[in-house]
Image (cartoon, rainbow, N blue to C red; front, side):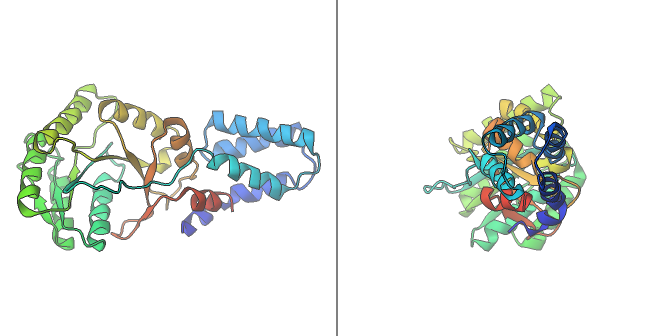
Length: 293
């Protein structure tokens, strides 16, 4: 699992091993902090880890580089829990997918549809991004390719109406999973964030506890800006999880850990490519091992 990460971030493990192949000095610890920061762990977490490792060396000056790496991995795993879906899943399970433009939101939604299809579920996709005709067309193409139900409206129509119609159709057709796309929006646009909250309220008129999942799609290559995005979206529509995309590109990988540590919002999925199968469940142990292998 996460074998692609080893190619992306393996230099971090190699740099740490080289740094601690001899007893470290102050310059070595400063360099270590820079390495951890470059891995997208964030300044606060990087500094904290370095302080802890300094303390370890004061107690035992003969620590090996392997022991340093093992300590880093252990600390990063603290508080990271794998996602465990509820045992009493609703039917239909309603998943609201949110995110900014360019994060990979629409493609991620299609990958989710493919995942639930492989589980034998009956899936419906709702094209709630009514502001972009291209988004509606893209999702409709995916729906036809996957063979799933699809609900749309006219461009520039009320996205809340699409969500309402989709849930009504899902109940009538015996759908297992409803995936609702939303317009990509900057977290700084307050009026658009309020509209997202409205979509959530309209869902609850059809199904009182919907949406059961609200997933934020985050581009891993933007680093620490991902945390600001998650904070704002969480304020307007409480998030149950994050889909981290574009980990096959220039992402450093550590942002997944930083998000969970700071926000306690679990990373549920990671996207590693453009294909329908390029979506994996996030497993903290495998991820951290790959990050510093």
